[in-house]
Length: 157
Image 1 (cartoon, rainbow, N blue to C red):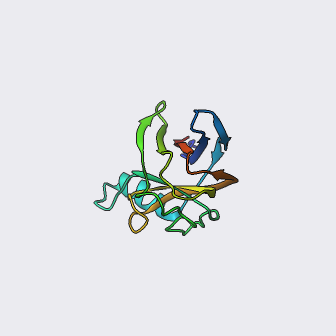
Image 2 (cartoon, rainbow, N blue to C red):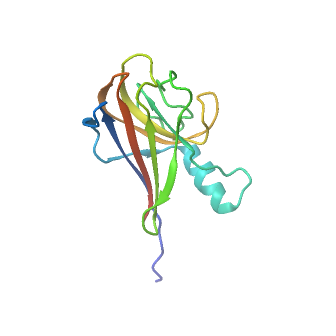
Image 3 (cartoon, rainbow, N blue to C red):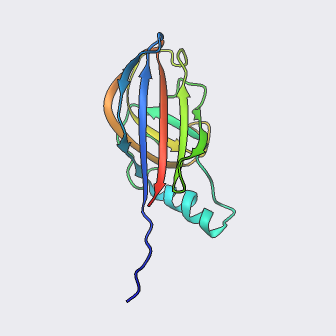
């Protein structure tokens, strides 16, 4: 009997709410996310198949809603006050992990919000793009003078 190779795809994220003085007001710690059906199909399967329909994460969004369902296409309660989603900076960590970082700058939202979900998207605005992955975390108050720094990692093991 021959041993078979297997690959498991897992995503993790961490968010920090940062005060104007640079101190950390909130930290989610590292949390596992959920990759949605479109995330597997359009971001991973189509890429490996060399399909013209393949896409990649380019932006992150924060919201006030629930965990995305496996067939979700949007992030529930996505913040719309910002002038679009947060652009991602892409990097790698070793041979099996892609890392993304983003910042929601201080002063972007007009009113305080209670945030508790995050997602990765292929588009820069709520009206466009495809949700790849997302999840919830314990609620966190976000004031207008606070920023959010985020890190997302997609690992293959």
